[in-house]
Image (cartoon, rainbow, N blue to C red; front, side, top):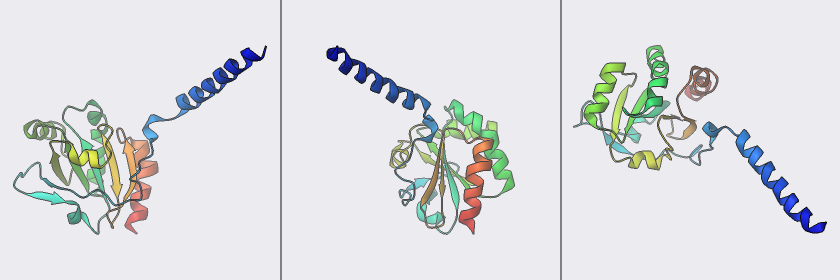
Length: 174
């Protein structure tokens, strides 16, 4: 009888862990960068390749860093939300074009609209790696001191914008 209790107990523990894991939201993976300084970068601008943007250029501003690519299907899903946010002119949105060809990225923005205050090109993905990007799209809220305060994994939805991002931006802008 006892020889069946140990395997049964292990099976029950395994099922409990599986049930907890399946109940978690994969979009809420905690980022180790929250409340830490944003990784430093200096990248070429997408529209004007001869110019650059660096993290220190954004000091003193609350801003969003939106990681996107022309090949990203989910980026199309969030794009209208970003266009509406850009029209509201609440917060600068910097686009980080991730592992993309410049001509493809420019064509995509021309076709679907450009919500970005500025876009920068991360062709090799090294800046994305430094930010812990799991996949595109991802969006970071960065405060005036250059500290990451929030990370949205996956498309920015109207709900996430209304309930998480905009209240946080308003608080950080005070």
